[in-house]
Length: 272
Image 1 (tube, one colour):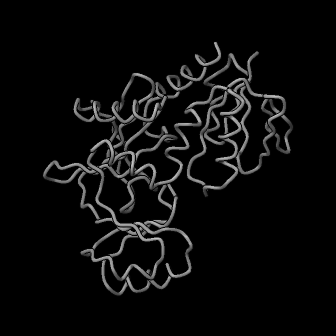
Image 2 (tube, rainbow, N blue to C red):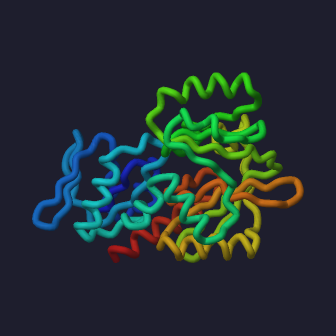
């Protein structure tokens, strides 16, 4: 029986892929060995030599072990979904945003400084959003509504060594996620408890994808060679849309189980 290693991610993959030996390990608890071209992954539960890897490392602090592991997967030649090459493109938010901009897709305008002392040179109308470093899943992000709060945030940002991104706040009527797995595309609107729609989400609704956005998503998918990819979109009342980011390890919450089986099919085809 072939072994599929699921790195981080959801707990249901054993049930979704019963024809394989599915082993799950957390990247933050593993060590990786490349020996004579063969890859071994070790944690307190033991050693696994995978035949394929499903990479589901989501909203955790980006660390060097993640890029090292991706490099070793690439060197071993073991199939991985997404591929290490694809995942390394999107590992850093700035690289991800540059990819979107280079395709002339409607990404939210943003400014970046590498030191907080340069924030005084950024003139942005309130409200706006500040994002610190390379975090996802709602972490490292704050909404700044007025000068008083901005002064407090600037004092806090003084201690960070990460780059800082500043974006206008989009007063959206819909937060939308489009997701492509292989050749199929799904769309969903969602609503969060607070201003971050992807944090403490309270409402999901799938709807028929729009052709223009499907074409944009497929163009992005092809550009980075992704088996699975999502774009998060904010839609204003006037219909104008803004891409917040793309995600090459998107969560599947709110979508039907069809997506889980489609992703399982992608990974199983790599070793069939």
